[in-house]
Amino acid sequence: MRNYPVNNYYSYRIPNIFNNIHHLQLVDACVSLELLQYLLTNLRLGSVSLDCCEFFTQEARLSAILPESLVSLHFGECSLRLINYDEAPTTESIAVGNLNSHLFKLEPQNINNLEYFAFSAQSIDRISNVNEFLAYNPQLKSVTGLYRSLDLVNLPVIHNLFRVDHLKIKENITNTAIDQHFTEFDNLKSLSISQSENIQHITQLLESCPNIKYLEIKHINEYDYYTTLYQILSTMKLKKISISFQESSSASFSIAAPIIGELEILEFSRLPPSKFDFDTLDGLTKLITIKFINLDYKFCLKTPPLVENEKFKCLCYPTSVVYHKFSKLLKHLSERDQWSNSVENSVENSVVEN
Image (cartoon, rainbow, N blue to C red; front, side, top):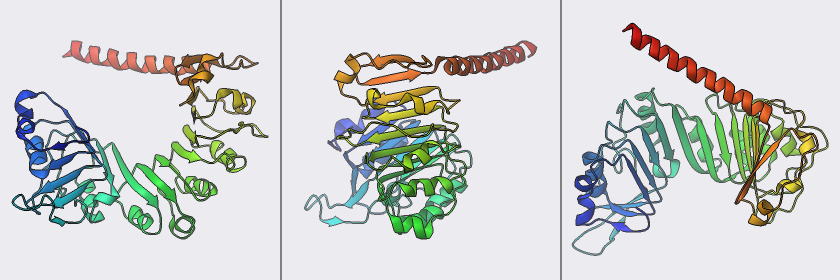
């Protein structure tokens, strides 16, 4: 449901008409909290995703209890508005939705099947409520924190989180926040950054995250990466790096020294393969795939540049070009198939024995 006020007779008939629905996604919707509670109660949902929604209610303390069937919960930036149905449509605006007492009953509550949980800091009133929820759900496989910025206000809050596996920064990282407050994140496995005042602070972040494996950088300035980006690409612990250049990027990617590290997947957005120097990758012995995505179609119509050593094979798509290092890819697929076969055999043997 997107960009539409949802609160009518037909909406309440959804559980009766579509009784097998397992996924509920609301984006940019205006929904009554009563309807949300009705859907959560009457649909056996496995996944709920709410993003950029405005919820309205007449009862400020109404709570929508989470269903026990949930496997995935994504709660983006949403707001809650108190209205009077008998008077003006919106007579009073209250604080951004509080997961504890407004949109969800996120008090100490165990949801046995829940494996994935993502939340926006802008939609939470007290971080202690999230920590209690995390403590009651140790079975969670992934916890993602969504923040507008990494600044002096948010950084101490993030450090007080009981657990966070993936961190997504929507807007920017400020210099003072990194210099004054950033310490180690032992649990952090991936980091997504949209902007940074200084790209060197990304390397400081990586040094503070000993277990990080995936890094995504968006809207990078082409003039920043000549020195610091080399350090990022050479970070030994990273397995995948995704870099998105600005729309007007015209840089050619060339580094004086070969890149070394444990990288398996390297992804560039808005950087044509013709501007990339493949010789810098000789030190990446575990590299499997290089992706060039979000390209103008004219780059994909042409035959991509041939690699002299022929270590990479190329696949072309309408807006992307993908290079595979086939020797590594085949080995990776072979190991995966061997593991899959061993699992199937063990299952079959156990069935026969029983």
